[in-house]
Image (cartoon, rainbow, N blue to C red; front, side, top):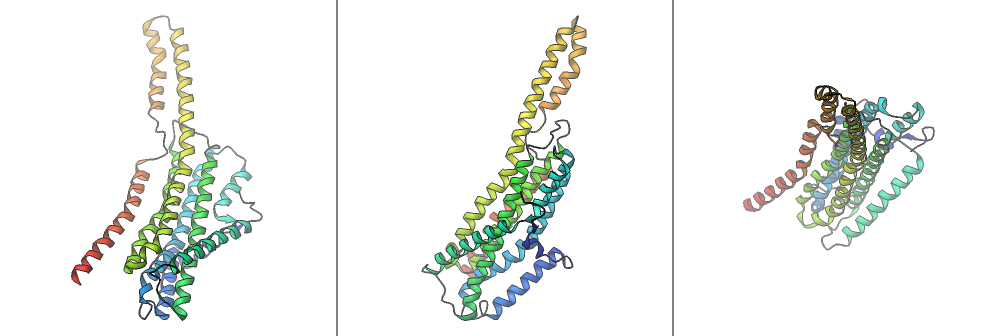
Length: 329
């Protein structure tokens, strides 16, 4: 975890203006990028062959900056709900919370290196492909620089979200599990589900590249592979450890109840007294046996199902629009 004294608030979070708020910050990014691409002639001019990729860059950057800010805020809220149930001193708990939105300079340097490396590799693949669009001047610079912004921002987003997922994985070993009241444990599931929102929204934007179908596959495939892997990691990391802890705690409690039942049965003098002694333990055993071993509730499950249908729906809509356009032409 980051040393609170040496870590600063993550630069990506500071892009969201407190005066404007998240929606208006996203709108400002959208307008600035649209004006940039329009000015260099990508949407209306000789470089229109790259308009699909440019539209994707605009949407993904205007989306991911405010959404990452929102997810980080929700993650902090989930952590605050867990705080009363953590076995750790106050200083350690504050250090854990601080790590959610503060990163040291080494973290930032490594993150930027990963994003720039991914960007360069992606550019080599695209520019060496047979469908590369010939660009010059400002259009060339824009269509080269914009993917760099996307890779740097997305790498920072995914890296930070995975860090937070690893934090909640660590917290699973320090949280007190009350099987009679497991509601606080849903914080783990909420972090897992809300973290996937960034990735699912990004994947939902990929069909925009179909505006230029010739280069869409080469341009989108690396991003789809990376985001799909990140999606699985972000969901599993916070959920699996707490699931194992719940299973272990539940098994231990059921074993304890069994021992109490055996002891109560041995003390009974007759059948009536045996029933009287055993009944409270039998009721409690049913309650413990019915405890869910996964930290989900109905609301979280419904939200996850809704998130998961977004990318297939966008791809389906894009395919239907493509068919409709072909028939009209």
